[in-house]
Length: 461
Image 1: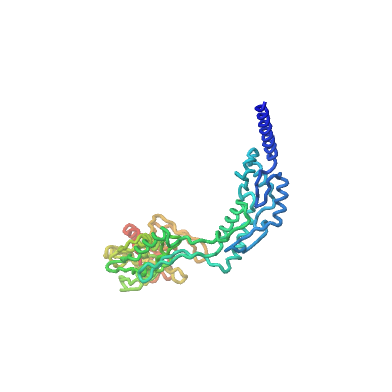
Image 2: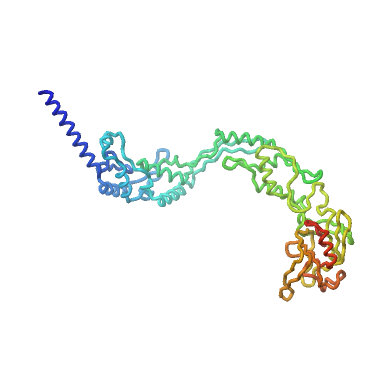
């Protein structure tokens, strides 16, 4: 009999707990589980409408604070910070993800529902505006952090320790506020938003840089221009080009370019005035034209950067671009060239120092501004059966067919045959000159065309 009573009692207790459990599970199908909080407000036991009303009322007066060193720096309404007033979507999401059958565990504190993520509660646009305005306002008298740095002084590497500033970084402020919302908090410690040094003295990266800089300090450099002309690049010059950006060693391109420009001005021949030993007029000064060489600065900067940042000394020929460069330092024109003497209206072709062909010619008509441009050029193309096109002085178009065409500049001036010219040489060019080209007798031009190679210098004076 006693056993029956005990069994009945246990059954009643179990049944009671079952009823309570099932009843609670049914209840929490439409109500929030115990200890559920959103932005610090307890919505446990409330349905979606009740929770929405509670949160909407709370946000009207709820504050969000920024603290620093134990003091409140700024307090704003949560809606000003960017926390939205419409909680409907957030509440629906929490309700749909909660397990109503697990309500006892929540009641005992084993687990608790939290806002799933800040995306549901935060208006990104308003938050960004708040962060921009706040950071700008706070940073007026704050100092930014500085990276640890390495510089050269008297040939040695000098280290400067990093400093930690208190300047607020907008992106970090946005992240900190979102994290606070995710954790149901309403405060942010500004220290978590400070911009931090990217490079610190005790970091492995800094020690690696220190080793690299010490190698660079010992770099010695020599650039060969031609023959015995060499330029020793001093260690002081080299180290003045070095800079560290984002933890990487590189060369200051502007400084290297400025150095190479000085060398170019001193040694390059492009655009320079040449002393030319003419056939009839002796030594003449010839300026202008498109012929000559310059330092290939893009190539040089790349090579110098590679050598110096690797801590390698260098002793090599400088790289050039253009025409006529030679390592022995002799004239960049050489001894194979075409000579056009405007004053004497005569043209010569020299090969390996010997005169091969020469003839009277007709150059540009000076009275109407069609002078043949003076300077040093080169034959950059050769074409047969070509049509020359341009405008006459009266504005009409012309088209002249020639058998041989060798352009020398970039404006349409070149050497060609001219069957329309009845005579060559003398003063004929002053009244019957060309539009700038050098008119050659047809038979002579045929020989010149076959003899002259592409790239041959053409000196006009």
